[in-house]
Image (cartoon, rainbow, N blue to C red):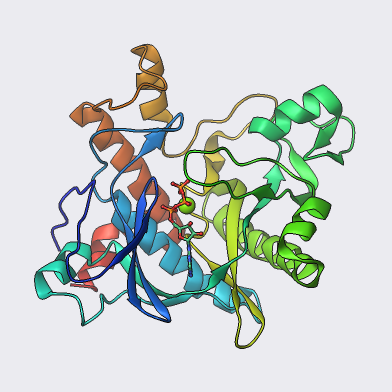
Length: 308
Ligand code: ATP
Ligand code: MG
């Protein structure tokens, strides 16, 4: 199945509900959404003007893979995943446009926190720890080094900011106030269980998932907490190639390192509307494909053939 590089999609046969940095959400019916992932890529918080070939399909297929794997490995887990088949109500040409890069999901009430789990200390958590010995306000053991694993993965939620705003790190107690005491402990426990199952699976396939962000929704009919959004992708997580991992220094990002280096070397870090040269887009695409293949054991082309 040939998939064109698409940075923006306008479907005329379904109403659009929202558009984020990478994804567009369409309403199928009262209970169902179409989750469409474009090939847009952001680095240092800005979106490049051109896309990365197959990125939308890879992110979609990685999430779909996880929904299957996690359902087996995390007993009782409910997810929003329904099917990779585009809805029949979509015009045929538009079905072709979104096939491979989209999934139908259950529309749920979203809990307004980002359920972040960290297995390794890096990024903003490392900065906070160096300065105060804490991570999201939680005291941590002495002696951690940059990119060390935590003794056990920790739950470090943040607020879910409106578009254009920045998420704010909060303590689990503050998160409990936002989602309600009734759900807070279940969300924390689920986030940790899903991370642990996913990180163990990835580690066997030479990928370290250093940290990740989950989102959860509520099924109001059954009062069940449901795993939603994208799951354990290189966009929602820090993936490190296990082969190059070393404590005490920054790790290469699995997917965006080429792009970040190129932006920095050319003084383009943080600039809006930058166009990546073809070789940078291709090198980035190759990294996403590598992550996909390590995780799923097959190439993205093999996965897409089945959906054609
Ligand atoms: P960005 O990724 O650009 O920082 P974002 O995460 O808000 O912003 P996207 O990832 O592009 O935006 O879009 C996904 C949106 O869909 C998120 O706001 C997420 O909370 C919401 N969402 C995910 N799954 C569901 C679901 N099952 N029901 C309702 N909303 C959902
Ligand atoms: Mg998102």
